[in-house]
Length: 390
Image (spheres, rainbow, N blue to C red):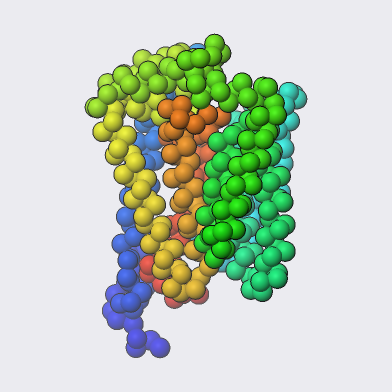
């Protein structure tokens, strides 16, 4: 078999590979460049959006930036571990993350419904269970679905997952994370489609979950008020409505080229939680339409590279890589778009962060960790790395 390999090597492992396996081999390096640009610009914009909020809270002006850098550092260490972790252990990671995600999500629900503020450690940053749940659910589907070959077996699993996802959607909605509920069943739909589930069933899955979210919102006056005050901010006299209307003003004043990085006015106490869920308003005000389009370009290049990776994994029959690559990449892009749309009051914002840009350390950690998965899979599909190594 060795004579089939021509003299060439991977720039990471310096291992010889065949010409066929090097098809698309620039994808890992290009992906790293895209992620590096998003991380660097994200840190700059996160600091710009958060320093005033930190000072108002009696913290150092670089508090949120330091939090992101710390979480990012641990995420990169985690990513290195994931890169070299044996494949069998990597695929079973959800056994640990899924129960932990349920605990975090339950804590968010209790806190949102009026219970005492539940935290793991005093002074420890809040952990978003919705982010963790989406991450863990993708890993679970990617592990289980390729192992269920019989239609009858898949039918039972689909039914169990359908019930479980309704419970998760309900918990996210009860914690007032309306956008995370949408993000969850959009991401799960991508995962199910990547696992060759019929489009008809994917459509009904989307419909049932969306119906549940709408029902929960309409059944509670508190949720209904929060929903419409963000969706139609000029007709409500609440703090949420004021923040949403100021977001629209900030975006409008950004114009084509923006005011310049650090020059935003509306981040100075005019928008609540501006460093997290409304960070896009600061981005639009400071870099304008041109800067926003550049960010979108990088996100869609990010998605394109992972679609190529999933396409190559389909040819090799690696369903796990296909499901995870498509789900994580679409999830990050969906999340970015939902954050942008919520800042524009096109959809009701409910605390959803913008990947790479929001000053949310835990979300930042998960985003970098997901990118570590995607980077490893590009090596496997584009360079034959795992095949030769194993």
